[in-house]
Image 1 (cartoon, rainbow, N blue to C red):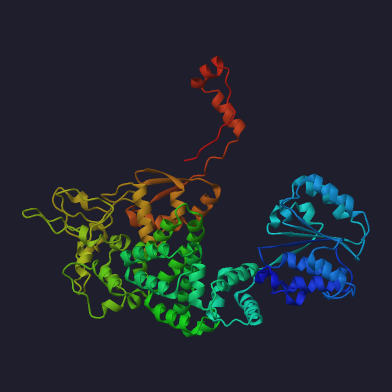
Image 2 (tube, rainbow, N blue to C red; image 1 turned 90 degrees about the vertical axis):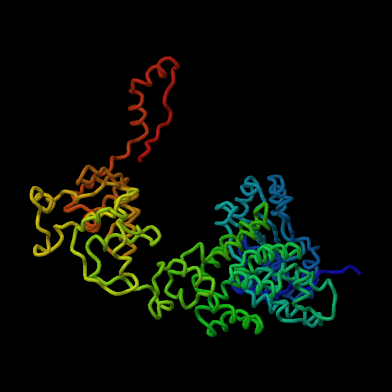
Length: 628
Protein backbone atom coordinates (compact mmCIF):
# COMPACT_ATOMS: atom_id res chain seq x y z
CA UNK A 1 0.00 0.00 0.00
CA UNK A 2 1.32 3.42 -0.91
CA UNK A 3 2.50 5.48 2.04
CA UNK A 4 0.67 8.76 2.47
CA UNK A 5 2.32 11.69 4.14
CA UNK A 6 0.86 13.15 7.29
CA UNK A 7 -0.09 16.30 5.41
CA UNK A 8 -2.20 14.25 2.96
CA UNK A 9 -3.70 11.89 5.53
CA UNK A 10 -4.78 14.65 7.89
CA UNK A 11 -5.84 17.24 5.35
CA UNK A 12 -8.92 18.99 6.76
CA UNK A 13 -12.25 18.12 5.12
CA UNK A 14 -14.44 20.64 6.94
CA UNK A 15 -14.10 24.27 7.98
CA UNK A 16 -13.94 23.22 11.64
CA UNK A 17 -10.88 21.05 11.05
CA UNK A 18 -8.82 23.87 9.51
CA UNK A 19 -6.25 25.29 11.94
CA UNK A 20 -6.49 29.07 12.27
CA UNK A 21 -7.99 31.46 9.69
CA UNK A 22 -11.15 31.92 11.78
CA UNK A 23 -12.40 35.02 9.95
CA UNK A 24 -12.09 33.44 6.48
CA UNK A 25 -13.83 30.27 7.64
CA UNK A 26 -16.68 32.23 9.19
CA UNK A 27 -17.33 34.31 6.04
CA UNK A 28 -17.21 31.38 3.57
CA UNK A 29 -19.22 29.10 5.83
CA UNK A 30 -21.98 31.70 6.11
CA UNK A 31 -21.94 32.28 2.33
CA UNK A 32 -22.44 28.53 1.80
CA UNK A 33 -25.19 28.33 4.45
CA UNK A 34 -27.13 31.23 2.92
CA UNK A 35 -26.42 30.07 -0.66
CA UNK A 36 -25.04 33.53 -1.53
CA UNK A 37 -21.51 33.00 -2.86
CA UNK A 38 -19.66 35.82 -4.61
CA UNK A 39 -18.66 35.55 -8.25
CA UNK A 40 -14.91 35.53 -7.46
CA UNK A 41 -12.68 35.10 -4.43
CA UNK A 42 -8.98 35.89 -4.03
CA UNK A 43 -7.24 33.89 -1.29
CA UNK A 44 -3.69 35.13 -0.64
CA UNK A 45 -1.09 34.29 1.95
CA UNK A 46 2.14 32.46 2.57
CA UNK A 47 2.64 28.82 1.74
CA UNK A 48 0.93 26.06 3.67
CA UNK A 49 -1.72 28.09 5.53
CA UNK A 50 -4.81 26.45 3.97
CA UNK A 51 -5.70 28.43 0.82
CA UNK A 52 -6.31 25.44 -1.50
CA UNK A 53 -7.78 23.36 1.33
CA UNK A 54 -10.40 25.98 2.18
CA UNK A 55 -11.18 26.44 -1.54
CA UNK A 56 -11.97 22.71 -1.85
CA UNK A 57 -14.06 22.70 1.33
CA UNK A 58 -16.01 25.71 0.04
CA UNK A 59 -16.59 23.92 -3.28
CA UNK A 60 -17.93 20.86 -1.42
CA UNK A 61 -20.17 23.01 0.77
CA UNK A 62 -21.73 24.66 -2.30
CA UNK A 63 -22.28 21.41 -4.25
CA UNK A 64 -23.15 19.09 -1.35
CA UNK A 65 -26.41 17.17 -1.79
CA UNK A 66 -27.56 18.52 1.59
CA UNK A 67 -26.74 22.13 0.65
CA UNK A 68 -27.23 24.88 1.50
CA UNK A 69 -25.38 24.35 4.76
CA UNK A 70 -22.38 25.70 6.68
CA UNK A 71 -20.33 22.50 6.28
CA UNK A 72 -20.09 19.73 3.67
CA UNK A 73 -21.28 16.30 4.76
CA UNK A 74 -18.30 14.49 3.11
CA UNK A 75 -20.55 11.42 2.68
CA UNK A 76 -22.65 12.14 -0.40
CA UNK A 77 -21.49 11.38 -3.94
CA UNK A 78 -20.84 15.06 -4.70
CA UNK A 79 -18.52 15.52 -1.70
CA UNK A 80 -16.64 12.29 -2.38
CA UNK A 81 -16.05 13.18 -6.04
CA UNK A 82 -14.69 16.62 -5.11
CA UNK A 83 -12.45 15.08 -2.43
CA UNK A 84 -11.06 12.60 -5.00
CA UNK A 85 -10.65 15.32 -7.64
CA UNK A 86 -13.06 13.78 -10.13
CA UNK A 87 -16.03 16.14 -10.08
CA UNK A 88 -16.94 17.40 -13.53
CA UNK A 89 -18.13 20.81 -12.30
CA UNK A 90 -15.16 21.57 -10.01
CA UNK A 91 -12.02 22.34 -12.03
CA UNK A 92 -8.60 22.88 -10.44
CA UNK A 93 -6.14 24.68 -12.68
CA UNK A 94 -2.41 25.16 -12.11
CA UNK A 95 -1.69 28.76 -12.96
CA UNK A 96 2.01 28.05 -13.50
CA UNK A 97 1.43 25.65 -16.43
CA UNK A 98 -1.83 27.10 -17.80
CA UNK A 99 -0.95 30.78 -17.88
CA UNK A 100 -1.32 31.77 -21.53
CA UNK A 101 -4.10 33.77 -23.13
CA UNK A 102 -5.19 30.66 -25.10
CA UNK A 103 -5.79 28.81 -21.81
CA UNK A 104 -7.86 31.73 -20.55
CA UNK A 105 -9.92 31.76 -23.75
CA UNK A 106 -10.64 28.03 -23.60
CA UNK A 107 -11.64 28.46 -19.96
CA UNK A 108 -13.97 31.28 -20.91
CA UNK A 109 -15.63 29.10 -23.57
CA UNK A 110 -16.54 26.41 -21.02
CA UNK A 111 -17.95 28.88 -18.51
CA UNK A 112 -21.12 29.46 -20.46
CA UNK A 113 -22.38 25.88 -19.99
CA UNK A 114 -24.61 25.14 -17.00
CA UNK A 115 -23.41 22.78 -14.23
CA UNK A 116 -23.85 19.13 -15.18
CA UNK A 117 -23.89 17.34 -11.80
CA UNK A 118 -23.60 19.89 -9.00
CA UNK A 119 -25.33 23.11 -8.10
CA UNK A 120 -22.36 25.38 -8.99
CA UNK A 121 -19.60 25.39 -11.57
CA UNK A 122 -16.39 26.22 -9.63
CA UNK A 123 -12.95 27.06 -11.01
CA UNK A 124 -10.03 26.91 -8.53
CA UNK A 125 -6.91 28.53 -10.02
CA UNK A 126 -3.85 27.80 -7.87
CA UNK A 127 -0.72 29.97 -8.09
CA UNK A 128 -2.83 32.42 -10.06
CA UNK A 129 -0.16 35.13 -9.97
CA UNK A 130 1.66 33.14 -12.70
CA UNK A 131 -1.01 34.04 -15.27
CA UNK A 132 0.17 36.46 -17.92
CA UNK A 133 -1.28 39.95 -18.24
CA UNK A 134 -3.09 38.95 -21.43
CA UNK A 135 -4.64 35.98 -19.66
CA UNK A 136 -5.85 38.26 -16.86
CA UNK A 137 -7.29 40.69 -19.41
CA UNK A 138 -9.13 37.83 -21.12
CA UNK A 139 -10.90 37.06 -17.82
CA UNK A 140 -11.87 40.64 -16.98
CA UNK A 141 -15.27 40.64 -18.70
CA UNK A 142 -16.11 37.19 -17.39
CA UNK A 143 -15.34 38.20 -13.79
CA UNK A 144 -17.34 41.41 -14.10
CA UNK A 145 -20.46 39.74 -15.52
CA UNK A 146 -20.13 36.01 -14.81
CA UNK A 147 -22.82 33.52 -15.81
CA UNK A 148 -25.21 32.29 -13.16
CA UNK A 149 -23.96 29.53 -10.85
CA UNK A 150 -20.23 30.12 -11.62
CA UNK A 151 -17.66 30.82 -8.89
CA UNK A 152 -13.98 31.65 -9.40
CA UNK A 153 -11.47 31.05 -6.58
CA UNK A 154 -7.93 32.40 -7.08
CA UNK A 155 -5.22 31.16 -4.69
CA UNK A 156 -1.85 32.91 -4.66
CA UNK A 157 1.21 33.55 -2.51
CA UNK A 158 1.99 36.87 -4.26
CA UNK A 159 -1.13 38.99 -4.39
CA UNK A 160 0.90 42.11 -5.27
CA UNK A 161 1.39 40.67 -8.78
CA UNK A 162 -2.35 40.75 -9.47
CA UNK A 163 -3.67 43.57 -11.65
CA UNK A 164 -5.81 46.02 -9.74
CA UNK A 165 -8.65 45.41 -12.20
CA UNK A 166 -8.77 41.73 -11.14
CA UNK A 167 -8.50 42.43 -7.40
CA UNK A 168 -11.37 44.93 -7.57
CA UNK A 169 -13.67 42.22 -8.96
CA UNK A 170 -12.89 39.71 -6.18
CA UNK A 171 -13.53 39.33 -2.48
CA UNK A 172 -9.97 39.36 -1.16
CA UNK A 173 -9.09 37.34 1.96
CA UNK A 174 -5.56 37.45 3.38
CA UNK A 175 -4.48 34.27 5.18
CA UNK A 176 -2.21 34.88 8.16
CA UNK A 177 0.63 32.86 9.64
CA UNK A 178 -0.42 30.46 12.33
CA UNK A 179 0.81 31.26 15.79
CA UNK A 180 3.24 28.87 17.42
CA UNK A 181 0.58 27.81 19.94
CA UNK A 182 -2.03 27.07 17.24
CA UNK A 183 0.45 25.03 15.23
CA UNK A 184 1.59 23.21 18.37
CA UNK A 185 -2.03 22.24 19.14
CA UNK A 186 -2.52 20.97 15.56
CA UNK A 187 0.64 18.82 15.66
CA UNK A 188 -0.31 17.49 19.09
CA UNK A 189 -3.70 16.35 17.76
CA UNK A 190 -2.02 14.57 14.83
CA UNK A 191 0.41 12.65 17.06
CA UNK A 192 -2.38 11.71 19.45
CA UNK A 193 -4.33 10.22 16.53
CA UNK A 194 -1.18 8.36 15.46
CA UNK A 195 -0.65 7.08 19.00
CA UNK A 196 2.99 8.20 19.15
CA UNK A 197 4.43 9.47 22.48
CA UNK A 198 6.26 12.78 22.21
CA UNK A 199 8.00 15.50 24.16
CA UNK A 200 6.35 18.90 24.10
CA UNK A 201 9.71 20.60 23.56
CA UNK A 202 10.18 18.53 20.37
CA UNK A 203 6.83 19.63 18.95
CA UNK A 204 7.47 23.22 19.98
CA UNK A 205 10.78 23.09 18.12
CA UNK A 206 9.02 21.84 14.96
CA UNK A 207 6.32 24.52 15.30
CA UNK A 208 9.00 27.20 15.64
CA UNK A 209 10.89 25.82 12.65
CA UNK A 210 7.73 25.78 10.49
CA UNK A 211 7.37 29.58 10.90
CA UNK A 212 3.55 29.61 10.81
CA UNK A 213 3.08 27.16 7.92
CA UNK A 214 0.93 24.08 8.64
CA UNK A 215 2.24 22.18 5.65
CA UNK A 216 5.86 22.86 6.63
CA UNK A 217 5.09 21.70 10.16
CA UNK A 218 3.52 18.46 8.96
CA UNK A 219 6.44 17.79 6.58
CA UNK A 220 8.99 18.41 9.35
CA UNK A 221 7.04 16.13 11.71
CA UNK A 222 7.00 13.42 9.03
CA UNK A 223 10.76 13.84 8.61
CA UNK A 224 11.41 13.61 12.34
CA UNK A 225 9.30 10.45 12.63
CA UNK A 226 11.10 8.83 9.68
CA UNK A 227 14.07 7.96 11.93
CA UNK A 228 11.85 5.65 13.95
CA UNK A 229 12.01 5.17 17.67
CA UNK A 230 9.48 4.63 20.38
CA UNK A 231 8.78 8.34 20.93
CA UNK A 232 9.55 11.75 19.48
CA UNK A 233 12.24 13.48 21.53
CA UNK A 234 13.77 16.93 21.27
CA UNK A 235 17.29 15.52 20.85
CA UNK A 236 16.21 13.29 17.97
CA UNK A 237 14.30 16.15 16.36
CA UNK A 238 17.32 18.46 16.46
CA UNK A 239 19.57 15.76 15.04
CA UNK A 240 17.24 14.86 12.15
CA UNK A 241 16.38 18.44 11.20
CA UNK A 242 19.92 19.79 11.67
CA UNK A 243 19.08 22.21 14.49
CA UNK A 244 21.43 23.50 17.16
CA UNK A 245 20.94 22.21 20.69
CA UNK A 246 20.53 24.29 23.82
CA UNK A 247 24.07 23.52 24.89
CA UNK A 248 25.37 25.19 21.70
CA UNK A 249 23.61 28.42 22.59
CA UNK A 250 24.77 28.16 26.20
CA UNK A 251 28.40 27.90 25.06
CA UNK A 252 27.88 30.71 22.56
CA UNK A 253 26.55 33.13 25.18
CA UNK A 254 29.39 32.25 27.55
CA UNK A 255 31.87 33.08 24.79
CA UNK A 256 30.05 36.34 24.01
CA UNK A 257 30.13 37.30 27.67
CA UNK A 258 33.86 36.65 27.94
CA UNK A 259 34.58 38.20 24.50
CA UNK A 260 36.44 35.02 23.59
CA UNK A 261 36.91 35.24 19.81
CA UNK A 262 38.73 31.89 19.71
CA UNK A 263 35.78 30.09 21.31
CA UNK A 264 33.36 31.81 18.90
CA UNK A 265 35.41 30.73 15.87
CA UNK A 266 35.61 27.17 17.19
CA UNK A 267 31.87 27.10 17.73
CA UNK A 268 31.30 28.21 14.14
CA UNK A 269 33.44 25.34 12.86
CA UNK A 270 31.45 22.92 15.01
CA UNK A 271 28.16 24.27 13.63
CA UNK A 272 29.37 23.64 10.08
CA UNK A 273 30.69 20.18 10.96
CA UNK A 274 27.35 19.14 12.44
CA UNK A 275 25.46 20.37 9.37
CA UNK A 276 23.26 22.73 11.36
CA UNK A 277 20.82 24.83 9.34
CA UNK A 278 22.46 28.27 9.39
CA UNK A 279 19.28 30.14 8.52
CA UNK A 280 17.27 28.64 11.37
CA UNK A 281 20.24 28.97 13.73
CA UNK A 282 20.23 32.72 13.11
CA UNK A 283 16.47 32.84 13.72
CA UNK A 284 16.85 30.94 16.97
CA UNK A 285 19.70 33.24 18.00
CA UNK A 286 17.50 36.29 17.44
CA UNK A 287 14.70 34.67 19.46
CA UNK A 288 17.04 33.81 22.33
CA UNK A 289 18.45 37.35 22.39
CA UNK A 290 14.89 38.66 22.57
CA UNK A 291 14.13 36.37 25.50
CA UNK A 292 17.31 37.45 27.28
CA UNK A 293 16.57 41.13 26.75
CA UNK A 294 12.99 40.86 28.03
CA UNK A 295 14.11 38.82 31.04
CA UNK A 296 16.89 41.33 31.71
CA UNK A 297 14.37 44.17 31.71
CA UNK A 298 11.29 42.51 33.22
CA UNK A 299 12.67 39.68 35.33
CA UNK A 300 10.47 36.75 36.30
CA UNK A 301 7.33 38.69 35.39
CA UNK A 302 8.15 38.10 31.70
CA UNK A 303 8.16 34.29 31.97
CA UNK A 304 4.39 34.02 31.60
CA UNK A 305 4.33 35.98 28.33
CA UNK A 306 7.40 34.19 26.91
CA UNK A 307 5.88 30.73 27.56
CA UNK A 308 9.22 28.94 27.74
CA UNK A 309 9.76 25.36 28.90
CA UNK A 310 10.97 25.05 32.49
CA UNK A 311 14.57 24.03 31.67
CA UNK A 312 14.91 26.70 28.97
CA UNK A 313 13.46 29.39 31.23
CA UNK A 314 15.94 28.48 33.98
CA UNK A 315 18.88 28.78 31.56
CA UNK A 316 17.86 32.22 30.25
CA UNK A 317 17.09 33.48 33.75
CA UNK A 318 20.62 32.61 34.78
CA UNK A 319 22.22 34.24 31.72
CA UNK A 320 20.16 37.43 31.49
CA UNK A 321 21.59 39.33 34.51
CA UNK A 322 25.15 38.73 33.30
CA UNK A 323 24.63 40.95 30.23
CA UNK A 324 23.83 44.64 30.16
CA UNK A 325 20.52 45.71 28.64
CA UNK A 326 22.35 47.80 26.01
CA UNK A 327 24.49 44.86 24.92
CA UNK A 328 21.48 42.55 24.50
CA UNK A 329 19.43 45.16 22.67
CA UNK A 330 22.22 45.98 20.20
CA UNK A 331 22.98 42.27 19.64
CA UNK A 332 19.31 41.54 18.99
CA UNK A 333 19.11 44.38 16.45
CA UNK A 334 22.30 43.30 14.66
CA UNK A 335 21.10 39.70 14.42
CA UNK A 336 17.73 40.69 12.97
CA UNK A 337 19.42 42.92 10.39
CA UNK A 338 21.88 40.19 9.39
CA UNK A 339 19.42 37.31 8.94
CA UNK A 340 18.57 37.84 5.28
CA UNK A 341 22.17 38.71 4.37
CA UNK A 342 23.51 35.51 5.93
CA UNK A 343 21.03 33.25 4.13
CA UNK A 344 21.53 34.94 0.74
CA UNK A 345 25.30 35.37 1.06
CA UNK A 346 27.55 33.30 -1.25
CA UNK A 347 29.56 32.49 1.90
CA UNK A 348 26.91 31.99 4.62
CA UNK A 349 29.40 30.37 7.02
CA UNK A 350 31.76 33.35 6.84
CA UNK A 351 28.84 35.76 7.23
CA UNK A 352 27.65 33.90 10.34
CA UNK A 353 31.15 33.88 11.84
CA UNK A 354 31.48 37.63 11.23
CA UNK A 355 28.15 38.25 12.95
CA UNK A 356 29.10 36.20 16.02
CA UNK A 357 32.50 37.90 16.29
CA UNK A 358 30.80 41.29 16.08
CA UNK A 359 28.44 40.26 18.88
CA UNK A 360 31.41 39.17 20.99
CA UNK A 361 33.24 42.47 20.45
CA UNK A 362 30.10 44.59 20.72
CA UNK A 363 31.04 46.23 24.04
CA UNK A 364 34.21 47.51 22.36
CA UNK A 365 32.43 48.59 19.18
CA UNK A 366 29.78 50.57 21.06
CA UNK A 367 30.28 52.93 24.03
CA UNK A 368 28.30 50.73 26.41
CA UNK A 369 30.42 51.92 29.36
CA UNK A 370 28.70 55.29 29.05
CA UNK A 371 25.30 53.83 29.91
CA UNK A 372 23.89 54.56 33.39
CA UNK A 373 24.04 50.92 34.45
CA UNK A 374 27.53 50.29 33.11
CA UNK A 375 29.23 49.81 36.47
CA UNK A 376 26.61 47.51 37.96
CA UNK A 377 26.71 45.12 35.00
CA UNK A 378 30.31 45.05 33.91
CA UNK A 379 32.39 41.99 34.36
CA UNK A 380 36.16 41.62 34.85
CA UNK A 381 36.90 42.27 31.19
CA UNK A 382 34.91 45.50 31.14
CA UNK A 383 36.40 46.69 34.43
CA UNK A 384 39.89 46.11 33.05
CA UNK A 385 39.06 48.02 29.86
CA UNK A 386 37.57 50.97 31.70
CA UNK A 387 40.47 51.07 34.15
CA UNK A 388 42.89 51.81 31.34
CA UNK A 389 41.38 55.28 30.87
CA UNK A 390 42.19 56.45 34.38
CA UNK A 391 44.64 59.30 34.90
CA UNK A 392 48.11 57.91 35.61
CA UNK A 393 49.15 58.40 39.18
CA UNK A 394 45.70 59.50 40.37
CA UNK A 395 43.96 57.24 42.85
CA UNK A 396 40.17 57.08 42.46
CA UNK A 397 38.08 58.32 45.36
CA UNK A 398 36.26 55.79 47.52
CA UNK A 399 33.14 54.41 45.84
CA UNK A 400 34.12 55.71 42.39
CA UNK A 401 34.06 52.23 40.90
CA UNK A 402 30.27 52.08 41.38
CA UNK A 403 29.33 55.61 40.39
CA UNK A 404 29.73 57.72 37.25
CA UNK A 405 32.42 60.39 37.18
CA UNK A 406 31.26 63.63 38.80
CA UNK A 407 31.17 66.81 36.77
CA UNK A 408 33.68 69.53 37.76
CA UNK A 409 32.38 72.11 40.24
CA UNK A 410 30.90 75.25 38.67
CA UNK A 411 33.35 77.64 40.34
CA UNK A 412 36.35 75.82 38.86
CA UNK A 413 35.18 76.34 35.28
CA UNK A 414 35.87 79.67 33.65
CA UNK A 415 34.13 80.91 30.52
CA UNK A 416 36.54 79.20 28.16
CA UNK A 417 37.00 76.08 30.23
CA UNK A 418 33.23 75.48 30.27
CA UNK A 419 33.08 75.57 26.48
CA UNK A 420 35.99 73.32 25.63
CA UNK A 421 36.21 69.62 26.49
CA UNK A 422 39.47 68.64 28.21
CA UNK A 423 42.21 67.00 26.26
CA UNK A 424 42.78 63.29 26.98
CA UNK A 425 45.46 62.79 29.66
CA UNK A 426 47.96 61.22 27.32
CA UNK A 427 47.92 64.37 25.11
CA UNK A 428 48.33 66.89 27.95
CA UNK A 429 51.76 68.53 28.06
CA UNK A 430 53.99 67.35 30.85
CA UNK A 431 55.07 70.91 31.75
CA UNK A 432 57.44 73.66 30.64
CA UNK A 433 60.87 72.81 29.43
CA UNK A 434 63.79 73.41 31.73
CA UNK A 435 64.99 76.98 31.43
CA UNK A 436 61.92 78.18 29.49
CA UNK A 437 59.73 80.94 30.77
CA UNK A 438 56.29 80.01 31.95
CA UNK A 439 53.43 81.23 29.78
CA UNK A 440 51.77 84.34 31.24
CA UNK A 441 48.41 83.72 32.78
CA UNK A 442 45.57 85.53 31.11
CA UNK A 443 43.29 85.34 34.15
CA UNK A 444 43.73 84.98 37.91
CA UNK A 445 44.28 81.45 39.14
CA UNK A 446 41.08 79.95 40.56
CA UNK A 447 40.99 78.78 44.14
CA UNK A 448 42.68 75.45 44.62
CA UNK A 449 40.38 72.50 45.05
CA UNK A 450 40.96 69.02 46.21
CA UNK A 451 39.79 66.15 44.07
CA UNK A 452 41.09 63.60 41.60
CA UNK A 453 40.40 65.83 38.62
CA UNK A 454 41.66 69.16 39.93
CA UNK A 455 45.11 68.74 38.39
CA UNK A 456 43.55 67.66 35.11
CA UNK A 457 41.50 70.87 34.89
CA UNK A 458 44.56 73.09 35.22
CA UNK A 459 46.67 71.15 32.73
CA UNK A 460 44.09 70.75 29.95
CA UNK A 461 44.99 72.93 26.94
CA UNK A 462 42.49 74.35 24.47
CA UNK A 463 41.78 72.33 21.29
CA UNK A 464 41.09 75.56 19.44
CA UNK A 465 44.77 76.38 18.88
CA UNK A 466 46.99 73.38 18.12
CA UNK A 467 50.25 73.54 20.06
CA UNK A 468 53.47 73.64 18.09
CA UNK A 469 56.40 71.47 18.94
CA UNK A 470 58.58 73.00 21.65
CA UNK A 471 56.04 75.73 22.50
CA UNK A 472 54.65 76.24 25.96
CA UNK A 473 50.96 75.89 26.75
CA UNK A 474 48.98 78.94 25.59
CA UNK A 475 45.96 80.49 27.24
CA UNK A 476 42.38 79.85 26.14
CA UNK A 477 41.17 82.25 23.40
CA UNK A 478 38.50 83.75 25.65
CA UNK A 479 40.54 83.79 28.86
CA UNK A 480 42.16 87.23 28.66
CA UNK A 481 43.05 89.72 31.34
CA UNK A 482 39.98 91.73 30.38
CA UNK A 483 37.79 88.92 31.77
CA UNK A 484 39.11 89.35 35.30
CA UNK A 485 37.47 91.81 37.73
CA UNK A 486 39.00 95.35 37.68
CA UNK A 487 40.61 94.93 41.12
CA UNK A 488 42.37 91.70 39.96
CA UNK A 489 43.68 92.89 36.58
CA UNK A 490 47.49 93.22 36.39
CA UNK A 491 48.92 96.71 36.10
CA UNK A 492 49.95 97.60 32.54
CA UNK A 493 53.67 97.80 31.86
CA UNK A 494 55.22 100.96 30.49
CA UNK A 495 54.79 101.25 26.75
CA UNK A 496 52.47 98.28 26.62
CA UNK A 497 49.29 99.64 28.15
CA UNK A 498 47.34 99.03 24.95
CA UNK A 499 47.74 95.27 25.30
CA UNK A 500 45.46 95.20 28.33
CA UNK A 501 42.61 97.23 26.90
CA UNK A 502 39.35 95.27 26.41
CA UNK A 503 38.80 93.88 22.94
CA UNK A 504 36.40 96.13 20.95
CA UNK A 505 32.92 94.72 20.19
CA UNK A 506 32.69 92.59 17.04
CA UNK A 507 36.43 91.83 17.10
CA UNK A 508 37.77 88.34 17.70
CA UNK A 509 39.71 87.57 20.86
CA UNK A 510 43.51 87.23 20.58
CA UNK A 511 44.49 83.89 19.09
CA UNK A 512 41.13 83.36 17.37
CA UNK A 513 41.34 81.40 14.12
CA UNK A 514 38.28 81.21 11.79
CA UNK A 515 38.07 77.49 11.07
CA UNK A 516 34.57 76.22 10.17
CA UNK A 517 35.44 72.55 10.60
CA UNK A 518 36.88 73.20 14.04
CA UNK A 519 33.81 75.26 14.95
CA UNK A 520 31.48 72.39 13.97
CA UNK A 521 33.47 69.99 16.17
CA UNK A 522 33.40 72.58 18.95
CA UNK A 523 29.57 72.79 18.70
CA UNK A 524 29.33 68.99 18.90
CA UNK A 525 31.34 69.10 22.14
CA UNK A 526 29.08 71.88 23.45
CA UNK A 527 25.97 69.82 22.72
CA UNK A 528 27.47 66.78 24.43
CA UNK A 529 28.17 68.95 27.49
CA UNK A 530 24.57 70.21 27.56
CA UNK A 531 25.40 73.80 26.60
CA UNK A 532 23.60 75.80 23.87
CA UNK A 533 24.80 75.01 20.36
CA UNK A 534 23.07 74.63 16.98
CA UNK A 535 22.25 71.23 15.55
CA UNK A 536 25.04 69.52 13.63
CA UNK A 537 22.95 68.75 10.54
CA UNK A 538 22.26 72.46 10.10
CA UNK A 539 25.93 73.38 10.31
CA UNK A 540 27.07 70.64 7.97
CA UNK A 541 24.43 71.61 5.39
CA UNK A 542 25.54 75.26 5.19
CA UNK A 543 28.36 76.95 3.25
CA UNK A 544 30.42 79.20 5.52
CA UNK A 545 32.22 82.39 4.49
CA UNK A 546 34.28 83.52 7.50
CA UNK A 547 35.94 86.93 6.97
CA UNK A 548 37.61 87.96 10.21
CA UNK A 549 34.90 88.58 12.77
CA UNK A 550 32.05 88.30 10.23
CA UNK A 551 30.44 84.92 9.50
CA UNK A 552 28.13 84.44 6.53
CA UNK A 553 26.16 81.19 6.29
CA UNK A 554 24.32 80.05 3.16
CA UNK A 555 22.20 76.93 3.73
CA UNK A 556 21.37 74.58 0.90
CA UNK A 557 17.57 74.98 1.15
CA UNK A 558 14.97 77.44 2.35
CA UNK A 559 13.80 75.03 5.07
CA UNK A 560 17.31 74.91 6.52
CA UNK A 561 17.41 78.72 6.47
CA UNK A 562 14.26 78.89 8.61
CA UNK A 563 15.70 76.37 11.05
CA UNK A 564 18.93 78.34 11.33
CA UNK A 565 16.93 81.50 12.02
CA UNK A 566 15.20 79.72 14.91
CA UNK A 567 18.58 78.66 16.31
CA UNK A 568 20.29 82.02 15.80
CA UNK A 569 20.54 82.57 19.55
CA UNK A 570 22.25 79.23 20.13
CA UNK A 571 24.57 79.88 17.17
CA UNK A 572 25.63 83.29 18.47
CA UNK A 573 26.18 81.86 21.96
CA UNK A 574 28.41 79.16 20.48
CA UNK A 575 30.36 81.77 18.51
CA UNK A 576 30.97 83.78 21.69
CA UNK A 577 32.13 80.67 23.49
CA UNK A 578 34.36 79.89 20.52
CA UNK A 579 36.21 83.22 20.78
CA UNK A 580 34.23 86.07 19.19
CA UNK A 581 33.27 89.00 21.45
CA UNK A 582 30.15 90.06 19.59
CA UNK A 583 29.76 87.91 16.50
CA UNK A 584 28.42 89.44 13.32
CA UNK A 585 26.27 86.67 11.82
CA UNK A 586 24.54 86.87 8.44
CA UNK A 587 22.18 84.18 7.18
CA UNK A 588 21.87 84.35 3.40
CA UNK A 589 19.05 82.83 1.39
CA UNK A 590 20.16 80.02 -0.94
CA UNK A 591 20.21 80.65 -4.65
CA UNK A 592 16.99 79.38 -6.28
CA UNK A 593 17.28 76.23 -8.31
CA UNK A 594 17.27 76.92 -12.02
CA UNK A 595 15.42 74.75 -14.51
CA UNK A 596 17.18 72.56 -17.03
CA UNK A 597 16.31 74.77 -20.06
CA UNK A 598 17.75 77.80 -18.24
CA UNK A 599 20.98 75.93 -17.49
CA UNK A 600 21.28 74.70 -21.09
CA UNK A 601 20.72 78.23 -22.43
CA UNK A 602 23.38 79.62 -20.06
CA UNK A 603 25.99 77.01 -20.93
CA UNK A 604 25.32 77.33 -24.67
CA UNK A 605 26.52 80.95 -24.47
CA UNK A 606 29.87 80.14 -22.84
CA UNK A 607 32.77 81.07 -25.17
CA UNK A 608 34.78 77.97 -24.40
CA UNK A 609 31.97 75.75 -25.69
CA UNK A 610 31.39 77.63 -28.97
CA UNK A 611 34.05 75.78 -31.05
CA UNK A 612 32.63 72.43 -29.98
CA UNK A 613 29.06 73.47 -30.72
CA UNK A 614 29.85 75.04 -34.11
CA UNK A 615 32.44 72.62 -35.52
CA UNK A 616 30.89 69.36 -34.32
CA UNK A 617 27.32 70.60 -34.60
CA UNK A 618 26.84 69.41 -31.04
CA UNK A 619 24.10 70.37 -28.63
CA UNK A 620 23.60 70.15 -24.89
CA UNK A 621 20.79 67.68 -24.08
CA UNK A 622 21.00 67.42 -20.31
CA UNK A 623 22.32 69.76 -17.64
CA UNK A 624 22.03 69.49 -13.84
CA UNK A 625 22.93 72.08 -11.25
CA UNK A 626 25.05 70.72 -8.41
CA UNK A 627 24.99 72.69 -5.20
CA UNK A 628 27.99 72.52 -2.92
